[in-house]
Structure formats: structure tokens, C-alpha cells
Amino acid sequence: MAMNNPYSAPEEVPSVIAVFPLTGALLLPRGELPLNIFEPRYLAMIDDAMRSHRVIGMIQPEENAAYRDTPGLLTVGCAGRITQIAETGDGRYHLTLTGISRFRIVEEIVAMTPYRQCRIDFSDFHTDFTPRVGENAVDRESVLRTLRDFAEANQLQIDWTSIHEAPNEALVNALSMMSPYGPKEKQALLEAPDLKARAEVLVAITEIELARGKNASSPLQ
View 1 (tube, rainbow, N blue to C red):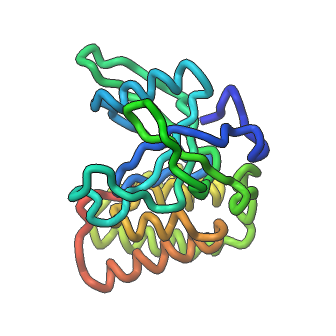
View 2 (view 1 turned 45 degrees about the vertical axis):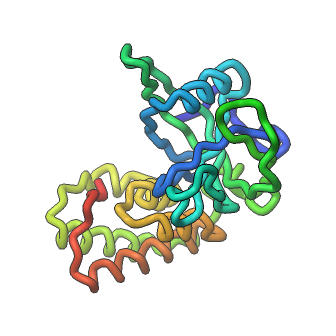
View 3 (view 1 turned 135 degrees about the horizontal axis):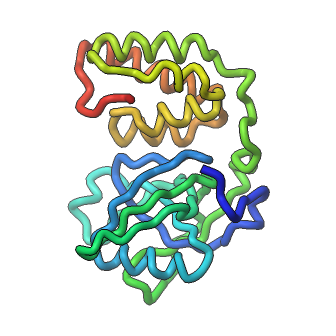
């Protein structure tokens, strides 16, 4: 999904943003993440974002974070812009967040808002701002072969026409975001240094799951 306000460099994105800690959620540059917002603090976060730059950061809390009132945050997340939003009529928002770039947390700031805010730094991920960087280095056949094996093992229906038409960046990032793997695997996909490495991580994780002979709880489709 194209954004009305495209970002071509780190300095174009706010350096302090609200963050949405969500275990197992993965947003990648130019990927689209649907969200169902219902907690009052996050409804307030969306209202405030819509009044300003429409940018929030997706990040995972630390492991076992559910046992703490204010869980620690992993250091790397991804900023996204709200590109679609709809009110449900029962106090919720359905929205789509389109990824801009990964970031590293510099510090969490003291804020009066009910949601958390962080100062962030994009310098480690400056190539995220340029679409399709590193596509030629991706082993596309390996990705497709592994996807085919995964689909057959889990009896999934795949739209192969769309898969074959997708450029490498869209293919690898969409499959990574939709993958049914756990928080650690999702973070490894997020932190992969480039698109080639992310494809390799995705293939490796999938091959491990296939070797274990486990069915996925959520299908790749």
C-alpha cells in the first residue's frame, strides 16, 4: 500500500514515537499489518497519532513480560504509518499499519500519556527507506521451494499466481510477517541485516519446523 506521505530518509520520521508492545507481531518495511485496537490506552495512542504524524512503532516485549506491570522492550522494532482506519461502532479501531523502517530504541521517555513513548534511532537501518534493496541477492527458488514444502505438509491452499508475480522484497517480507512462528523467530526475521539474510532465516526456520513434523497453528497464505 502506497503512503500519501512517503519517507525517503530517517530524518523525515519523528525521533520520538508511541510504541505498541505486542508479542509475536512482526512489521517490516512496506509490509501491511492489520490491527484490532480495543484497549483504552491504545485507542488514545491511535487518536493522538491521527492528530499528528500517524506514525507508531511496533515492538515486542521481553520474554515473560506478561508477569510484569511494565514489561521491558526488545531493542529493535519497526515504525509504521497508519494508512487505513475504521471505527467498528463498539469502541474499537480496525487499522492497517504500513511499515516504514526498523529502528533501535535509544531510551524510553517519561510521558504523561497512558501509552509508552520512546526515542528511536534509524541509523542502523537506513537501507530500509529504499524499496527493493538487495532483491537480486535473494535465492528466490529456495524460498519458493520451502514454501511449497510447507504448504504440502500442512495442506494449505496457496495463491501461486500472486506468489510468482510478487517481487522478492514483497514476497520475503509478506511471508515473514504471515509466518506462524514464535516471538523469537519473528524477532530473528526482523533483525536480519538485509533481505537476503531474512530469506535465509525464513527458509531455515521453516525447514526446522518441517523436520520436526509439526503442523502450524496459523497458515501461511
